[in-house]
Length: 392
Image (cartoon, rainbow, N blue to C red; front, side, top):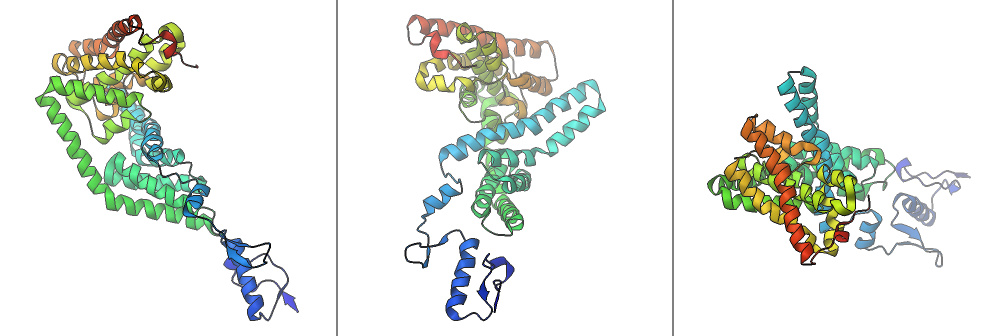
């Protein structure tokens, strides 16, 4: 007399002919067969006929689960993806908020509130997507992002989502109750991480941001140079200058210096490469991102000198002469979608000095200075027009 496997459903294998009265040998074989289907690490050796543990190393298991523990994964891919999450929530919400404030149109203010409230979820999903998380992990990462952002700001969202996504990837599709296990593990790990590291991270980033802002107010010339150059370089690198500025809550004069540096990179590269990239390159870099030049910079780092030298000049001009200020959401965006100038307008509220500052710092000076420095390097034959060519 035979029957189907009599082990509990969660461990039940697909065998149809299992004796009702399990002898020790048949029971063990049945259990191992059940576990073979339930736990992928157990397999049957075809030569000996004995179930054995698969010789799978930790490295192989992580590779199988698409878990790559590298600096590139967490500090470039994940941090870069934060920019998309921020732009789709906080940044666009700030733009709508400014429009609502100036036009007194209630719908814009309502949209702004919803956008800003979705920041944590947008960060979680964008970071998890960059980590190539499977669907259940990706959707569950929204909760981890909300918890991390609430307790630790954008950095808290980054840390909690990374931990949650990687933990979720490890258990994804490993059980027959994946619909419960995967989101449960992802959310638990994300929330616990947010509670554990969030407050400390928030306090550190706030203190560091206040240090930068205070130093800029005390030494606007030297800090204007430093902040402008570093944030501008960060914008062109494959990381997110916008995320960095928001993490540090970089506003006031420091925000203005950061804006000068970002605009110098974007407008600078757009003008410097106009000869070979035309109008398409002008718009792609001037209103998009100078990160497009990163591949060319790797081939010839000297092409980075003209816009960087321009940022060293425009930074202190912004802080000392025009007293330019910005909000954290706009400080690291430059002329991308005109978010930087819009942020300046939001922070300063208008006035002839503000408009003249936007025109010079964000557009004219970066174009003129980069063109001059570029001409010098072209004559020295340090760089050539073809070095700036983009495949657009």
